[in-house]
Image (tube, rainbow, N blue to C red; front, top):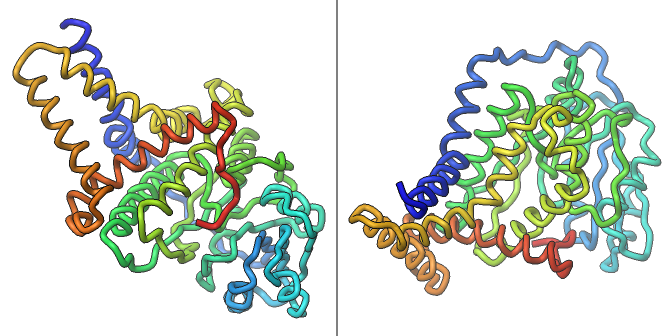
Length: 375
């Protein structure tokens, strides 16, 4: 085996392990563990539900109505909104709602700053973080808290469900998200997930670690700091919340670049994650988070290696890869073609991997615009 063929199979192996081998492996490993159902809770602890918002005046009433409908013991759920430099009347809207506490300040500082301020006000033993846009099922907080009260558990993530997609592109993104939840559920059952769903997750207040103001992924850094203490982060599929998918590639690209840039930022700031004896979920972390960021370069290596390797097999592999990327290019340039499931799937897959490249470029150059913005 010469250098080109070796490079081809190494690159192919990385891609296959990342998207097929690891998900199946963690699923099989999880089946060896018995999932412990939470005990009945006789005395529900007090909970503060924190919602950070920026220019969300149009959604505040709907969110508050949703939170009022949550099925949690009366007097045990406190609602705290933080308006981060809003200029659209969000502060006025919050001031008019008598059963909601709010923190408002004029200069925008970002979501991490908002969460840090909120935690200075939190006096309950448990805090739940949520966003404005998503709607929460009435029983969701009970499910989160019941899981959090289990021994050895330090954080619990809700399960984001996307409403019926209106485009084929959105349908493929929804498929990817269902695949992602399948992996998280397996990781949770086996040991612990790597991060949480930012729109709904719970921790004990004492386990909160203050964030730097420019932190991009609170829903990754906070749960990972919990895991670092030897506690588990679980995925609770019954704690459901609903959101709308991005209907087009541009919106999903922006969201993905922000998320992946946040991964690079967290990696750089938390080198302990790369030390096996310091990171209790090292295998999950590398397999689920790190290798996905290497896939675009493995795909490029596969293409170059197949062009350089001898033999009909590698020539056919090169043709197949060119066809794959040509399909993605056509899907990106000709929106009408994305009504085809195959074209849409290929386009979304390539776009997601291209977002990883863009995220790294932005992070390295320090010119990233991956801020806390609505997409």
